[in-house]
Amino acid sequence: MSDNKIDKKHVSNNSSSNDSLSSSELSFSAPSAVNQQKRNFLIAATAGVGALGAAAVAVPFVGSMLPSERAKAAGAPVEVDISKIQPGTMMTAEWRGQPVWIINRTDEMTAELAKHDDELSDPNCEVAQQPAYCKNAGRSIKPNIAVVVGICTHLGCSPTEKLQAGGDMGENWTGGFFCPCHGSKFDLAGRVFKGSPAPINLVVPPYQYLSETTVLIGDDTKAEA
Image (tube, rainbow, N blue to C red; front, top):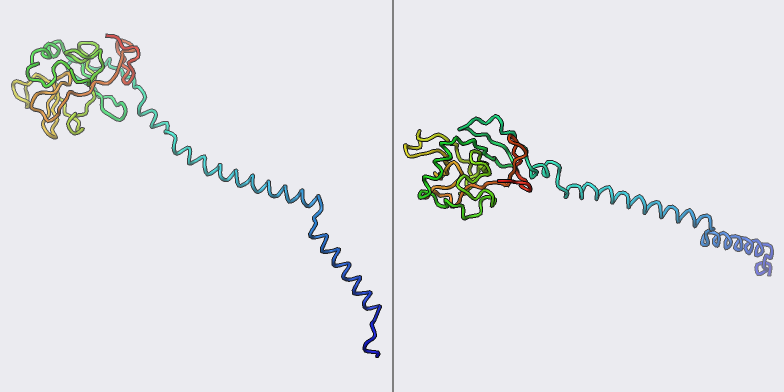
């Protein structure tokens, strides 16, 4: 009988312990308002840091897509001082990564341009390789100054200057340019001779005079003949 007796004090103690545990469990499952605010703050802070990290990664990526200052400068107009080009000589400028020849033709050189039209593929500049204001025998704004891109229209080589008459080009040569790659020949206006591999004349870029001694290559908004 003594084994079957219920220890009321023990039961009471266990009951109190269970009640205490239940209260403790409830306190964990139902966080206070203060704790909830902290949790919300941590979530927001973490999201903000993640957004900043994504932005930091995106900025260099977007920056790499924008043209560099050097790239923009490569296509910008170029001012060239032509005051020191002696008659019968030339200088080379650079525009868009290409050589641009500026030739100071003598009166004799200019006069020769009209004497060999029958030897040229496009003497009247019918192919639009020059601005409208340069569609003339000299392919220039001023008769003595020619501005021509020094790239052969065959395969993109750079021809050699042969400005003087005769010489190693033969007695009938009146001056111009010779492309050693495949033998194309151009006169002092950049017009191609018949029989050359190059199909069309050299390019005359857009340009204008800022003064008597300064040429702006790449911009002809105020070009005057």
